[in-house]
Amino acid sequence: MNKADKSDMDGVAISVTYTGEYEHVLDGQRRIAIPTCWRVSGGGDIFFLLPGRHGALQAIPDVTFQGLVEKARKVSFADASASLALARLGSMAQECRCDKQGRIGLPHRLIEYAGLKDAVVMIGALTSIQLWSPEKWRLFRTADESVLDEMQKIGERPESLSELLKGKV
Image (cartoon, rainbow, N blue to C red; front, side):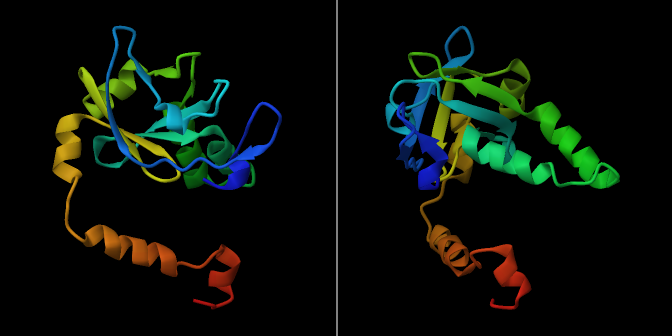
């Protein structure tokens, strides 16, 4: 996440990078606790929960999601495929606000999508959080070096779309 993505109670920018792996129990009210190191002190963190790839859920921080919304506002309503994509995204998105204990509630339909039962593995994906069933995560978690290849590809990407269009790649 960029330094400007979150701010503390005084409006000072705070940088949050989501790293690590945490396993939590889904409580009787379908809540999980976001790890303290992933929250801004004072509570009230907001995430948007969406179905992700491979049967995981994606918890996107509010500021990142709002950036996506700003880009979506530029899409023409006359663009049929874009309108349908925005409708699908909007219908699947669920706003989740952390309570004082740092818990967020998971909607039943998203719990079913991800195949969550009692335990949830929370994965720091640097700019967002992924929620996996322990069984699915074990299938996708690898100890090979392919992650290094992906990091190299990310490092080689242009900083902006304008660089790509100008042929600086």
